[in-house]
Length: 199
Image 1 (cartoon, rainbow, N blue to C red):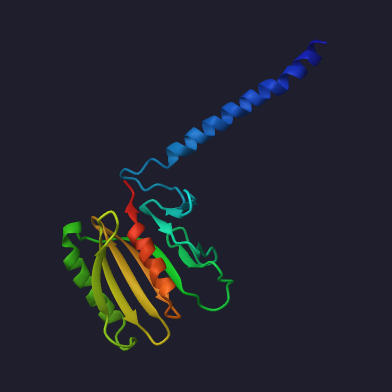
Image 2 (cartoon, one colour):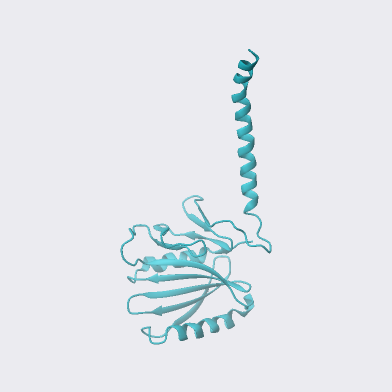
């Protein structure tokens, strides 16, 4: 009889134990993403859906994924996600946008010097491969970060590189526009404008 009574009570105790374990896991997982100091977090990039827009979050920062675009799992890596139009089915080369973060020795206030270095590198890399000059311009994100923009026309595509300048680091949002669509340009600008560095 004693065993049978304990047997009836065990499911309740088990449920309480499971709830406590789940709460502890949620707290532990929440704490993992907070360690940003001098160490690099091992947290994988995530996509969240606050209200209507989707936000892509990585160790270095976050940006909004435009409506009608998706992450291409087949070509993305943890350090370099690729985004393509939502209707892309995997055939041919689509319009695409990749995002990477890199380090350099330029301070934020040295954006002009960093820009000259990028221009010199692009000129050397693309010699004889482009149609017309590399055009350079500048902008800012919604949060006020400096953006250096380089547009390169090739025979089969237009590449636009958006360098968001940080303190001895940068984020490169690289747009490859295969069909000359305004939607691709707008999607890249949307990502750039919405970018925010991680605290």
